[in-house]
Length: 476
Ligand code: UDX
Ligand code: UDX
Ligand code: ADP
Image (cartoon, rainbow, N blue to C red; front, top):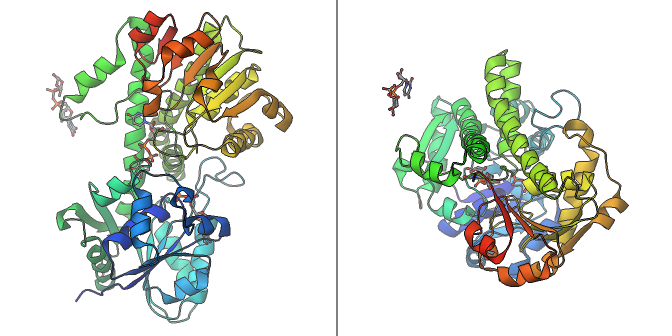
């Protein structure tokens, strides 16, 4: 019969662990859920009485936390205690791309995962089910198992792979109504029992037919494949956007026309300045690294092209701005609307805005940034990080901290950011950008006043009537 889980621990209180555990706790009041993290500030923020201070912004998340926190949802820095008490342990720590040594710039850095495994092995006194929630390269579960079982403390560990498919900005809805939940485990009886224990947790709110169970390796590879396919759709439509601009076609009309084909589907065909986020690039690089490792160079090259196209799209947008402003942006004020990698999140990891800003800074533009949810410290941290990692991937010269401070200003008011600007660049599709008083903005700008819409959120015809010069992605 199915083992009933009453105590869950999650290691990692980030964009994945935080919302996922909050929803499990909300939907399963009979399960005690403890989310632990080494980062004491992050835990303090999750525990803050003021729900506006939660470390991540997601629509609807504050309500879920308010409902469950203190009842059966707890945030703590006492990792050992939570591991010891839990029957099931989710691992959702960060797995960035390696920045050193073997596989640098491509392979996932598994050091955080490995540390978790060693800690679990050291602390555990009874049998546990370990669930890998972070996106990981295929065969990580195997590595986890090897570490866990090498201690000889006679504790039985079952390792499951249950990748999370939530998208940021819609995390709570995605968790409440997932298209599917994927659980991979071993084929033997113990593996199947562990799978059933996790199925029973999700069945509290997810219909059984939406819970897919597979072998561990298929589950791990499904996650990489799903993200590679999604990113591929964005790069494919972005490739077509470049052709649209040359031929006079309209990429949004094309998206509608092809999306109506049920074999293609309407979603994820929005042309943009380029995809960002912590997953797409990292997961594709992982996939490419795997293919190279298994000596499949043609397959590796195929997927690598998705990233090259994305780099091209970001570069194309920055170049369009420089070309349109008479071949130089030096000393010119460019207002950025949006810094997050998509709307409704404060996450900026791999955001296209960072790369576009960098190209303009290389030409010594003055950039004035407004984003409704991103704090100034984050903007500067992103630009600094890029400078220190420039040698790995990005061309150009590193800017000093002082140069960045002099050239970049972060505003809390969009109108001040745009005042006296030569041009406006829209980098994130925040809804509020659509309802700005564009007539007023125009009045305060230098002329000719340019708008470069990297998300096709404002109306080209309306803005042109006001007097703006408007560039849209994929509109010839
Ligand atoms: C295609 C388009 O589907 C159609 O809309 C267009 O008008 C003409 O081109 P067609 O070539 O007749 O139609 O057949 P299609 O079903 O698309 O298959 C094309 C090839 O892809 C076949 O060899 C098929 O076996 C292969 N295929 C298709 C796969 O290998 N896997 C699939 O999942 C689908
Ligand atoms: C993605 C996957 O969607 C999710 O299933 C997985 O769990 C994690 O990675 P996320 O990165 O949070 O989620 O957001 P997503 O909505 O996928 O957007 C990724 C990037 O692609 C964003 O920069 C977004 O603006 C861009 N995008 C998306 C487009 O440019 N066009 C589109 O049509 C869709
Ligand atoms: P994701 O988007 O995958 O959720 P985040 O970076 O938002 O990634 O969150 C991962 C969290 O995991 C971070 O808050 C980090 O401090 C935490 N973390 C990393 N390693 C450990 C560890 N060994 N023990 C506890 N927490 C950890």
